[in-house]
Length: 539
Image 1 (cartoon, rainbow, N blue to C red):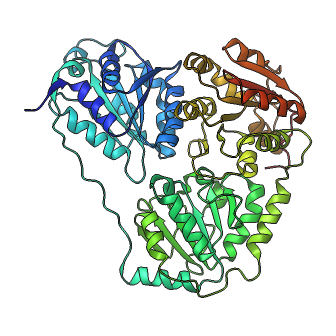
Image 2: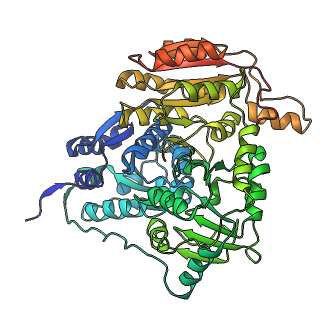
Image 3: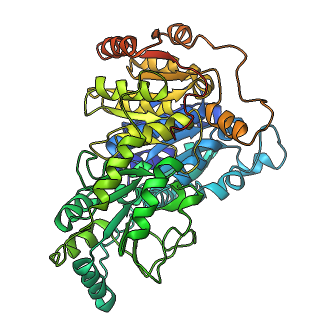
């Protein structure tokens, strides 16, 4: 006989079976049953100070445990606070299940307080939306999880009417069968094997869809080593090949300075293999950067190309890791890059992004990388510092540098680092952000204090929105709306929120602060004072 439970319990139990152990949000009366059901199912509910922060904390956890993010938002304003992080999940391909409470349909006919159409609000930025029903709660939950965790993941909404959450339901265990592994075959696959074997100047461009497959990063690394093919990654795919490997060309996406060296290499390649490459991370310079009629360009992709930011000579919608594994049956039949261009490009990139800067943003990044353990996981906020750090930061394993790359939203780095610290408390978790991003999110540092989390928050404080100020100045526009009249005491804010706060003005002070933060019993905010204009010529 099927077990009779509440509809909210059916959803919570299915989320637990999908690996979810954490949920984040701010409760209202409309979601109390949801919170109770999650807790009963074994999913800890974490109270945050803003729904946006809750979603980013969940993403930090996701990059450690692989489970979908669970974000809870109450009716009306609760959901509206979450719009940014839901849009980020859609653009950054983060599997997320959003649970909202809503007014029952019959009541909404004559009651308007806080009533709005949640599904209509989120429909453009989610993969699917559902309204929970008691009779099919288990089915709806499975559909939501299956869609959220497809090869290209994203957010899904389950809107839960108040009465439905408490209504009797049953587990029907209707689960979609796991997607099969698809590997290209036939004449086109044979042609691809021939191209790989005979190419003199092959190049791999790897993107974040590689991370969605459990064996994706390992398969890509083995493939690159087997065929001796250099690998450029998008920012979020950094680490799929350890960046100490001579074949690793670093991350690409937003830095014109890096593009100056990487794009000529792309244009010299006779075979470009796009492995899980999603161009949503890339700047306009990566729109049609190759000629598929003159170069062999092969797209191994999670979903069909609807973006038209590039085209390919051959295109396969397939399992990327399994396909790379199958292609390794061949042996390279030609010497790779006989002119040594990848090594020369790497040398040029090293000169372009030096680690020997005395102070300023490059000095902060270089000193932090030298002081922190190799296994450190970091998050980085949007801004000029993200462009510079993504070029300078040596990444050894995937998912150890996380950021908002598709939407490029500010304020994400602190809660992301908190999520990393929650999911793996034995590994250092560090957030890098500018003063503008920090000022968006200081309230949720109290959540870190309450939960006993110990991330290190490094703030590059130049009293300016540096990237926008730089663009404004380069266009010779009047300085307006980009500088703070005062340099805020960010270290004092860290102390006020329950952590350690330290101000540093040179590399020696930064090293001391990081060493102390690594053994502190609470979070640490390091307020690194740098001069305005420190990014000029560096990104």
